[in-house]
Length: 321
Ligand code: HEM
Ligand SMILES: *[C@@H]1O[C@H](CO)[C@@H](O)[C@H](O)[C@H]1NC(C)=O
Image (cartoon, rainbow, N blue to C red; front, side):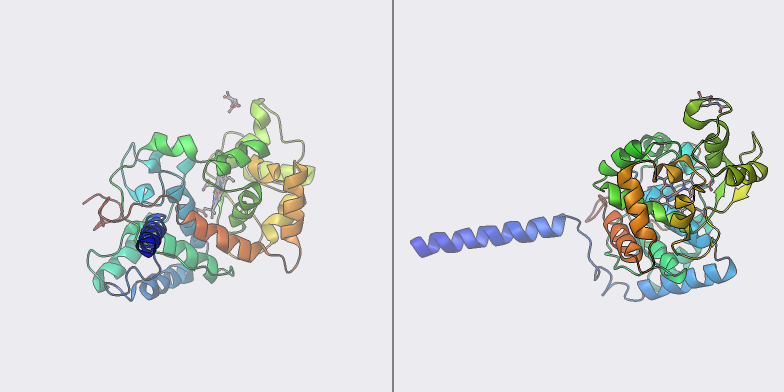
């Protein structure tokens, strides 16, 4: 009797263990090993082609993962077209990479029709973009499915506006399970890509919501040169967030430390002792930035995905089936 009881306890614990571990994320690195073993290679090949044409698009692909996963999880919702869709949100200003994701999806569909989700393609492409610009790799567990919901106000409710303070940034990331160090590490993605003056303007002309005020913490010569690139009222001129715009390196943190962060939120990283210490440790030669970034992106890619029979595998990434 006693041994049957013990066996039962062991069996029940085992079932609970398996159940929690499978449903925790429901993602696996071998998800497509039977149905689409080529998927990682095909995505990498297409991302390579895309970056060979324009290396700055790496930034577009990395921003897509952040903006997809933060809003109701990594479910491809950011890609859906529509006037009221996430893409139309203020926080998604000038979001790009849609035609590039379509290009990747077309290549994947040619090998494995209606098998691989757009959400998985975003996660793979973001990883490949980081690696191809000089970052460290991470494993991308797969099996996400695509959502049918995409609402602009969902995005503006959770994505950070570029005027937040350090504490507000900490709160924003804490809501998704990331600590302040991970927030500083993930902000390091601004080492690639570009911005438009829209996100910079408040730092130059409306700091803390005060008309005409420039962020007083900015290096004055840097602020003056930014104002030339972004005259008052201009929203669309393009500025690179660090000098080595197509290289995943420590230059972003160097600029932030030198008081040359373009957004209020970049500069905010050095406005508290905790943030300043984090930036100083990340900017050191041989720093753990690259491995910490890889780890944080892997973690981000697992934010509440749709799995099993939830959602769908979209045929075209910008449209529901
Ligand atoms: C910490 C809060 C953050 C704020 C306030 C913020 C804000 C912004 C803004 C305003 C832009 C410029 C968009 C444009 O005008 O084209 C931008 C670009 C970008 N962001 Fe962030 N961001 C944040 C964190 C992140 C994170 C966590 C990631 C990814 C891990 C990320 C990745 C990028 C990339 C790669 C670009 C360049 C996009 C391109 O080249 O098209 N950002 N961000
Ligand atoms: C400055 O910021 C405040 C607060 O966010 C806003 O109400 C105001 O319209 C902004 N002014 C300009 C010129 O953008």
